[in-house]
Length: 529
Image (cartoon, rainbow, N blue to C red):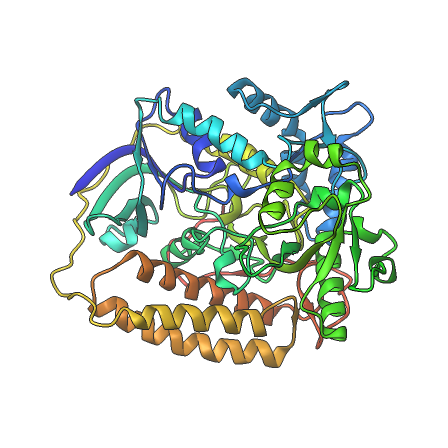
């Protein structure tokens, strides 16, 4: 089956839905969701959206905090562009009906680690869910948006693949996970908004959908990828055998939460003068250090000194989830461990969200805009999604309507049904375990090389599997995870220093000059973004 639209959006999180809504008045949009519109990493975001909304705050202060957290690797133009457009992005959400939490002064603004002021607007401790629910309701009502739930993109369709000799994207092949049919979706413009790659690690705060699909597809199509070594590990993921990927928001530490050893003593002041309000990379490494030094399974985050009414007002979801597991945070500390949380690198894009392939855009966690540098400042992620979704939509609306070439249907005539699905499960498990062990919070060159050798073996095995058997949802995700893992390792091996989220025991010093790690596949006819 071949379908044609004006715009194809791969990913239904905040960036994808925001762009779809901005385009839908005049463009026919196809919106691809791996599960349902409600299932995305955006909906899991607890903290909020960082923006300068208070007269006591300033654009310059937010920029300064972002660059400090990013270890001076941030692109200055991109950082200013995002932060200067922050208020307008938040106002747009308010216009859509997002019910941000209020106080006696207007909207309540939280302060999180790395921020010098209260500037995080939120909906209690479930901001992402509230924003996603609001936008999803609107997306489902738009006649110009065709929603493809339970569909997963396999690969982009480019002029190079079609033998046209150009470097343009014309859509993608998409698997209907229910029927097993592969649909060809053609579009004059395609936006990758498929999120990050947290599931490449054994422990992550991300949903199961975060398998690096957009990054891997863009890489295979010839896009530049940068700074993949900078994987943010959230310092405080709930440690409990019945809890899966539940993070304890940065805002808990922002409101006075203290990190403790099992004997009740604080340890963050030993590692950083900012204590619990240090940036995430500092806190994650401190926790990792204390756990390994003392042989601990976890450390503890204590907010029980705050009144119960305060905790119920500001952290109702965290309080309820912990209570379900027998932890009363009004009386006892929360057991926590670091977990893979955010992919700071990704597909290189410009201020219009354009990649180096014509007609292909990227927004959200799959992108590398330069905003985050070597470490994302808390609550800058949803802001980036909103600003670059608008940038992509604005640029797409400027483009004249283009004719699509003839697009071939997916050819499955030379493959058969897989005989052993267990191969996929075993490879998935092996990948996530050695990435956690060898490419985690603290790295060495030997560990990275060991991981690279394992990746080469997995790549050959998965390529062979992909070539001979029908594609499945699990196979597509595994293939993309292996590509993404390889990109992380390649970037990490190229950085001969420790900066931000990348800490190497072989290169513990930070170099005087901050440079990006940009890698690309060799392809003719490339253009600069």
